[in-house]
Image 1 (cartoon, rainbow, N blue to C red):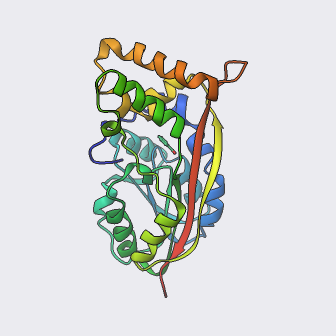
Image 2 (image 1 turned 90 degrees about the vertical axis):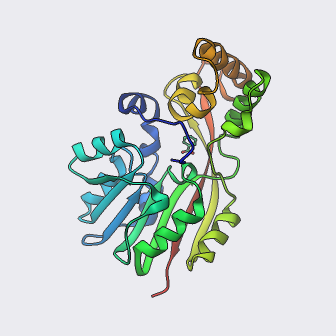
Length: 253
Ligand code: BEZ
């Protein structure tokens, strides 16, 4: 996650409201195509749900995450996981592949991440991942920013995320020596397991934190009311307006 973000990760809350994040990781895992014996780094491994799938093919996988509680969850699965800031990777010339799902939009500056990945990879190594791309959760983001502004707070300053275009991210990869095989935006409206307020409280805490605690329920209700015409259906089910940026790149041999 970003160094300035106030986001924290509660394992039970995450399991209730965000399990779909790893459940929907199958396509990017297919793109990684991990093989037995490969050494693979998983950036933003969270509680290890996808890391475990990489390990299951016989790869030697290392997970890193900024959150100690998520790393504890990954270790409880028997994974080799470490608390680490992905803008300061400690690895050089040792991984066949670096993987990341639903994490890179939290980690700033992105240049530091990509530079560290290029150093961590062996020659010919690949970098495959998916994260929030340009337009991701834009309705949720805009409603949250507007609600903060309406309370006299600085909504845009609370925005924790980096959501680049596919071209912007391909350029960043190329600038660090990668050959980019693909970099595409994929709209993926995503049904939520519960209320929009629960998604915001779990995954967008930076928008709630500036509001005095006694007013937070009222703030969340206002954001929900604003979003309901676009993101809540007639049966009361919420959908988040996700857009993924999925990419694959590799270093020269
Ligand atoms: C995402 O995976 O795109 C995402 C997750 C949490 C907050 C915002 C975006």
